[in-house]
Image (tube, rainbow, N blue to C red; front, side, top):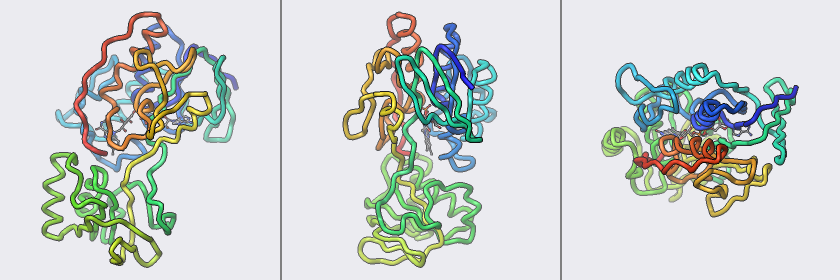
Length: 336
Ligand SMILES: Cc1cc2nc3c(=O)[nH]c(=O)nc-3n(C[C@H](O)[C@H](O)[C@H](O)COP(=O)(O)OP(=O)(O)OC[C@H]3O[C@@H](n4cnc5c(N)ncnc54)[C@H](O)[C@@H]3O)c2cc1C
């Protein structure tokens, strides 16, 4: 099966979809493909009912406002519903569960592997990579990390009720996980390599976790590192052994850069960020990179949704030969 379009966008996250809508509005025929569902990163990484830090109006994409029912920050589920509505409103062509596994540029020709194992070919004049930066969870690099009771995504907190859980990390995801496990009746341990949780943890979470740590309701192991994990226990630096049922690693994500290498996108610096022209988002005549994919692996989020909204406009201007729009200012978001 062969699909031909003017522009092929890889990644149906918020910025990939926004790029598709902006370019469609300019008259381009746009096809989007994604290895997962719409908003796969949010669907995979947000535990149920987790709220964005960014306020709704800053999450809204080109051409469709968000009207939150309770004027509050959105949950992941609410934003995914918005993305579904976005695709329908802009009549975007999106092939979900189609992973790009091979391809060349000049001209653009890609092979997508569908969920049923079909190979589908895509051809286009222009390729836009909107592939994000959270391809795989960071690893501790200690023995036992692959044991079945060690996981990198919290999932539904309900599963931890009545269990002994060690959360590893000290940023937002770790703190939020610790609080939610505590609230479902888990016996929670929090291990972080620094002496305190991160100062940029969401302002509505930090005082609560701190008071629970102070009173010992959540048992803090700070500063400590995990040295080894066995089926029976976890060994921490300093020699302490903890007996727990579940270990949840919340220590961030890495970009894998595989598609950049596939399409000859040069990468630079410790974060492996793609080398692009920041005015046009262009890498070469037929390849552009937008969204959080432009940042490589982020230790702290500097590129996120609200300061990527100008990327699609830059690509549109470059394709039309117009001057690029001026950059948008964004407020920083806390550590994820
Ligand atoms: C717990 C948590 C809270 C967060 N809170 C916020 C917040 O408050 N504000 C904010 O702005 N951001 C937040 N983020 C980050 C947020 O998830 C990203 O900013 C957002 O998803 C980035 O959008 P994007 O379109 O650039 O990339 P992504 O949403 O990451 O989309 C990339 C897409 O590319 C697809 N893809 C990758 N490789 C391939 C391939 N080979 N073939 C096909 N498809 C591929 C992926 O499946 C994915 O759907 C948070 C993240 C986490 C984990």
